[in-house]
Amino acid sequence: MDPPRHRRPARHPPARRRVHPHPTTSPAEARARFNATLDESAQVIAAVSSDRLLTTIDPQPTGAWRHLTILEAIFKVVGHVEMHTGQIILLTKQLTASDLDLSMPRKR
Image: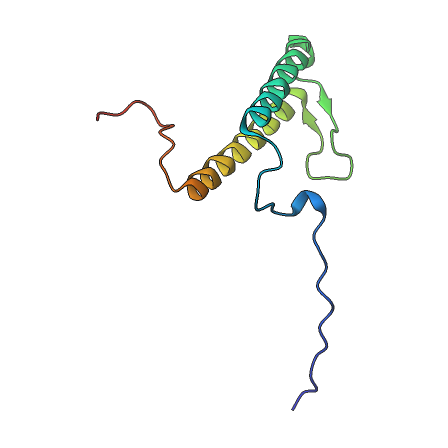
C-alpha cells in the first residue's frame, strides 16, 4: 500500500482571478469604462495608416502572440474582447435568471 500523500496548502488565486460575489462597480460605471475603452481603441486604430497595417510586430515577445501584422493583432484583440463580452452576457443571464433579449429582433 502506498504511503499517504501530503497535500500542499491551498493557495489563493491572484486578485484579478478571484470571483467577487457582489459587483465592485455599478452597472453604469462599468458600461462607461467599457465605452471609454472602446472609444480609445477606435482612436488608436484610426491613427494607424493603411500602409502600416501589414507591418510585422512582436506584441508579446514571450507570449503566444508573436510575429503578427498589425492588422492580425487588431483582429486578435477584437476576438478577445468578443469572447469576454460573451462571458459577461452568459454570467449576467445566469445571475439574473432572465433572458437579456440581446438577439436580433424576433417575432413575439
